[in-house]
Amino acid sequence: MFKKFAPAALSGALLVGASLPATATTYEYRMVVNTVHVTVSCFRGPFSEVIWDRPNPVFIDSLVNAGYTFPEAHAIGERVCRDPSTVDRPDAAVQVMYQIIAENPPGR
Image (cartoon, rainbow, N blue to C red; front, side, top):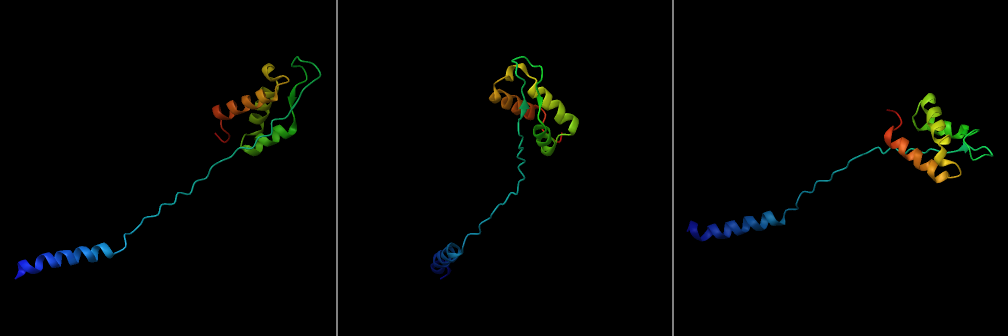
């Protein structure tokens, strides 16, 4: 008699197990992504030579706000603005700034 009820009991257990909702797991990862906003602004003299070139205060202030110390910000500004390859090429100055941030991120 047990042999007759065993398949029925097993199929009933499978139906009950199949009707239960599957438990789902939700994962949440909270991340802080630092976005650095830097205003590259240089004073360029009237000559193509690098004589008068220097960073504008807004450039230094944006570097300080991004996390660099004032001496670091001033050195970076001088490096970007006095680079001879960036004379009359503002896009090159931005690329130099990207390279500096990649090599020496703020707050290091």
